[in-house]
Length: 179
Image (tube, rainbow, N blue to C red; front, side):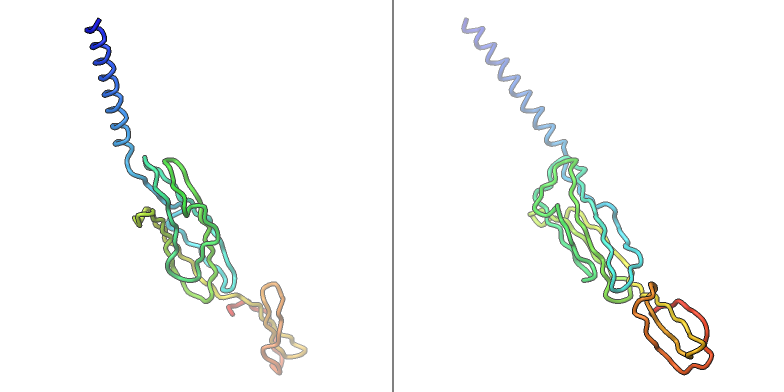
């Protein structure tokens, strides 16, 4: 009887040892978290000065482990701001994602840039996304009145019309141009 109990205990111990090795091997082969923003990089294109455009970017974990709690930050030009963020304070498990919405509102012409960064609570950078956009001049309509000899400027939709020159004789025509 004693021999039978000893064999059962040895067999049970071996099963536990095999199970422990299998679980440990699976955890070791899972790999680290792999986070990436999409789309990346992102160019907002031309946005008229004084206007705004928004883009929602996805942060996904394609790795084998959770990321720990992440914090998303934006550095660079003040023309870019985060308007929505479901990522900060979230631990992304394998196969999960979250979103960040970035707004581009240029205050002047030019091509500013910014970087979106996701870092974990240990300050390890897990993903970055380069953002660019071009602040474009607003176009206006210009027209001349032959009867009054004036040149008028207005927004493309015709609002805000005002005389920019008068007494021009027989100036006639229409033009579209930058501000």
